[in-house]
Image 1 (cartoon, helix red, strand yellow):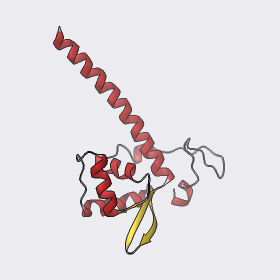
Image 2 (tube, rainbow, N blue to C red):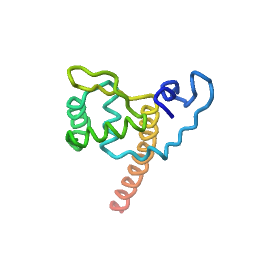
Image 3 (cartoon, helix red, strand yellow):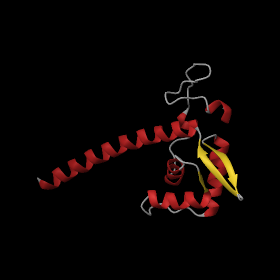
Image 4 (tube, rainbow, N blue to C red):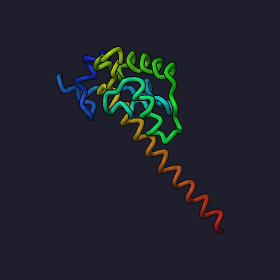
Length: 133
């Protein structure tokens, strides 16, 4: 699937140009690493590398710190997968943004994480109940 193809996919996975359902094989992309998750989440607005590194650290409350080498390797891989795209270049700074496919993959990861959180909270609450007995 090329970047041109992904640009016409709506949030429900429908190709807005042809009106056909597009079956996205999420297993090709998921699960995301923690760093990749934060890179995609931070790119809800287009950013250049240094700004993205700062935003990831802030969003993750200091739990994820990405160095330049890791970031530019991630940019190359994510761009190749069609999850992000270079939107402009200003004074040698490449600015990247999330593609529609990237947004759909991020949304699926968030859905899966929400299930994990619910199950984790349930397990912890039951562990705590067991300790009180």
